[in-house]
Image 1: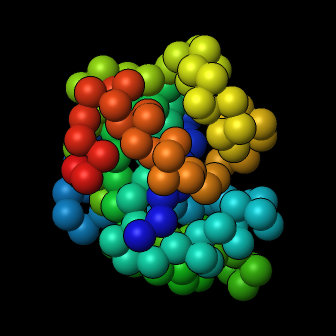
Image 2: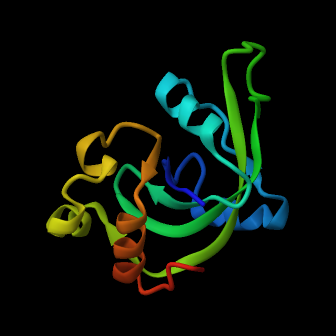
Length: 141
């Protein structure tokens, strides 16, 4: 299993929106960055990810699971763009803010800190465990 982080502006697609989609999940569509697209091409069903609210909130708020591998993005006819489907697994007991992450020396190399603009990013197993601990949830959730 691999770990990822999915960023969304809550005014566009929020954690509550994701939860409302249930077990069927939702396409992580609209990504128009080649590196983020390539990361989605690497994903497997069952991979886990953090759901991150960008903009004002700037916090990891939940855990999602990849429920469909990369396929054409239904929001465009341009065949260069693909996406995965994700479903909500569990909210964090307490959100982990970007400030919290930046204040944690063990997370200094996290992609979120180094390349905060990228909408889909890898997360190492060590980072996964640390953020889960900070958020008050079991990393095996």
